[in-house]
Image 1: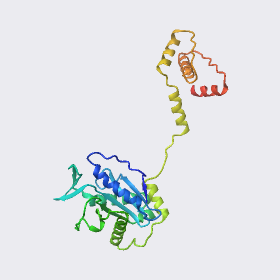
Image 2: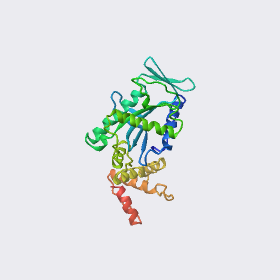
Image 3: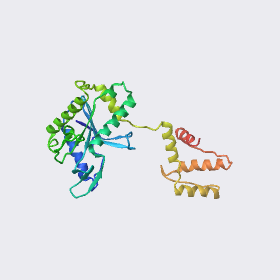
Image 4: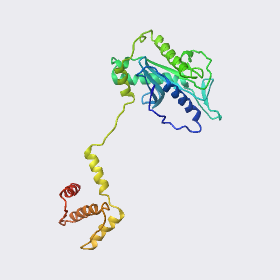
Length: 289
């Protein structure tokens, strides 16, 4: 399966190394999977609208012919006590929160769907795609079934043992949420065009290029900046009627001549700038405008 981006952008710190290793493990499984020829998985997708966060991140967003699936990954040691979630690595370093991975995945999915609907409109095809979510614990064994934590949406170490097991888990999660929708999405295959539209919105490829005029102006500004030696020569002109400036190509003689011309014109004096090449003369003339 294609993963976007094609490499991991995060750098693991000593505290979060094992937690990010969980994402790396899931990424390796996804890369090995063939979940349809057009399936694409977005890694670390930021969502700028959320129910109560200014900004949130979705670990993985799988877009396939079966719909959209948001996956929340928790590596390391996972525990839950008195409503508090705790995630720890093998060195005893940990972090806690009350939100939990199930609510993270759920709210992340709804936030994403809301942005899609707002962007395309309620009746547009991308807005009517099937959306679901799942939670992945790649390094721990899960043996619980509660109203808040349905086993059908959970992948543990057994489901993450190899690509075959993980493929079965993804099919299970898709089936679970499709059944919860009353069969409204069952059998409705997402088209390639719908997938492309959604991908173009969620993570487009683009290149911002400066207009030619802006590039020329920036180039001219850099070209007309004087170095220390050139400033010294410009100061000498104020004290001497004649100066002979000798230097090789690219040493800044023309830049100094242009700066001198500007200084003399600013002082109210007339300037004759003689150049032996018409093309170079046109180039200098443009810089003096």
